Length: 146
Image (cartoon, rainbow, N blue to C red; front, side):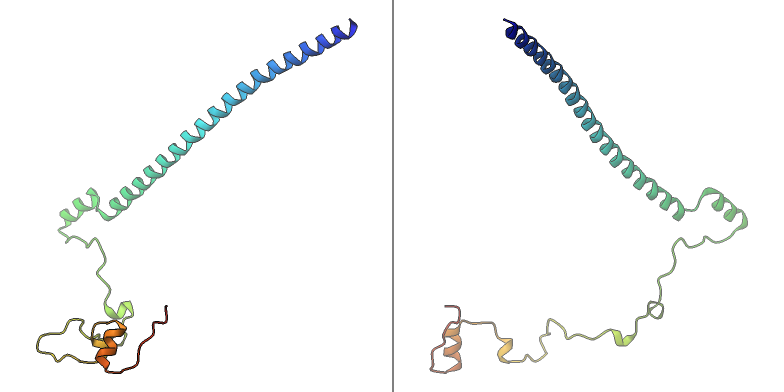
């Protein structure tokens, strides 16, 4: 009977510990799911911040290109011509191009008056049997892929 009471104490102790463990693990799972949701929200917010930063940079760039009202008003009062917004295109010497860098290519489409070359390479491709009959050789052509 004494062993039964010790066994009963162990069962109650381990049962209580299992119930407490289950409750705590549910709490931990709830906290972990909240952390995951918050991480997703942080990622969404970071994407929104990046998008807004890009828009801000675009607006700043547009403002730099566009003259502000003070400069326009002072220019009108002084009767100055408007300054160019962009720089002129660089010349060929500034870009470093020389006339020898550009090669002339033959025209891809020939005009009607120009003579055509009648070489073997200017003809469309044909099968081996047709080529054999056109070339006039009597020996058979073997297909290397068979």
